[in-house]
Length: 146
Image (cartoon, rainbow, N blue to C red; front, side, top):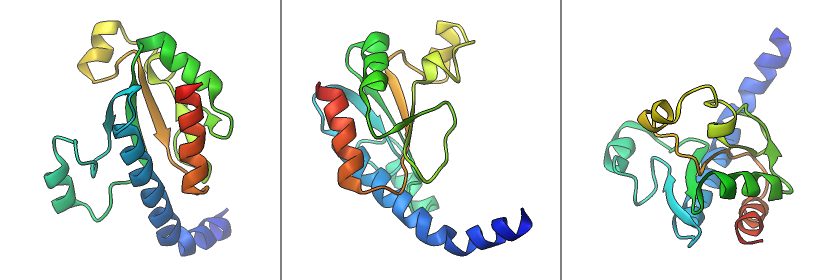
C-alpha cells in the first residue's frame, strides 16, 4: 500500500491540473445553461467569493455544485439520465462522479437543516474526473436536456 501511495503522489500535480481544468469548464457550461438555477465553483464568474478564492487558491478544485430547475424530481431524473458519469455518494476518483446530496449524503437531515447548509432539493454535486472535457460536458448536457 505504501508503495502504491508513493507512486500515485508522483502524478498528483498533473492529475489535479486536469481535475481543475475540467471542473472550471464544467462550471462555465453549467452557469450558462437555461435549466440550471446556479452553479457553485470558487473560480466561476458568478461565485460571490471568487475574488477571495483567487487570492487564496491557485486553482478552484475539482468539485462543482449546481441546482437544476425543477427541484428534487428534476435532480433525480438528471441522476438517472447520466450515462458516462458514475453515480455515487463518494467524491474523489479519476472518474467523474455525480451525486444528489438531498437523497444521499444529507438525506438524514430535515429540510430546514439541509437549507441551513445550502443543500437545496435540486442540487447536484459533481466530482469532476480526468476524462475528456467534451465527454463530461456532453453527458451533463444530454442529461439536462433529454
